[in-house]
Length: 371
View 1 (spheres, rainbow, N blue to C red):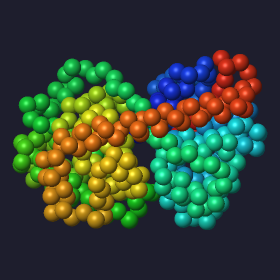
View 2: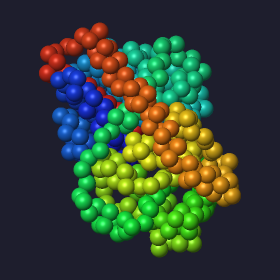
View 3: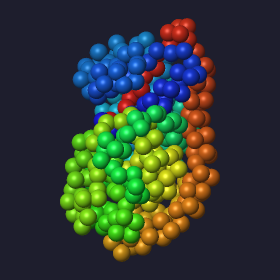
View 4: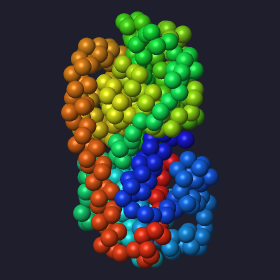
């Protein structure tokens, strides 16, 4: 489970449910979990259906939504585009919901994206670089830059003893960390290099602040494996904790309000930190992370450019300036939240313009998840 993906889907559904009476069909890799977790009327196994079975699922729809998240990249493009292409063949209105795009180096992938997105009724992307990639491959439709729907996430209640259950002594400053695998977005990233960087950073907080370190796995099990690898390289591993409990995105957001500071790689970990008002140092491994950080008016230095000395100097300065960082995040975040809400306005305008086949109470929409 990827908590970033779950936050995206939960907020798309919440936005639409608050504005229109609708039934939802979700094309999912884990339909049973999607039905239970999100309370949707219908979820189907996206990668297991034949072409004919997909067509039968699509036929009743009034709108097909592709997104959100970073879904159009080599080599998975065709898997994500199949349902959208078939929906277009059926004449169903289609749109993208704040998607990320790239890297797209494969010629066949670029051709497939070009063909499908030129057939979209509405294209919204998560960041400016996604628009540039689509324009570069020849997409001629208007492309609207909105923002990640997870920015609309709201905190959910947590048990009062949640940190105690995690074995964390609240007497010490709590510093959150996020680590991930290189993945398709950064296949050349040196795992040993960034594991060592994060271990040094964690030890810095322990030795300067007597802090407790909390690694937050946004995607299980891969983030757990990488967190353990980082802890194994720390000089003070006894001060490190890896979040054991499973939390909803809203619960994790509440938990992160307990942090004094954060250091991380994953986009949605940093996004949650911003929503929680927690100043942070990003370790951008891909353009989507760097762009989010720049939207907040913060400096960026990619993982590939880092060495231990530069990172610790960067962290030391950022910690001393944490109140200014918090104020900058608080100032810049509302504009991003407004952009995230704009996607809903555009989707409903499209739905109204195209006209629903049935009463609004029987409206169905479909969403293709990132993971």
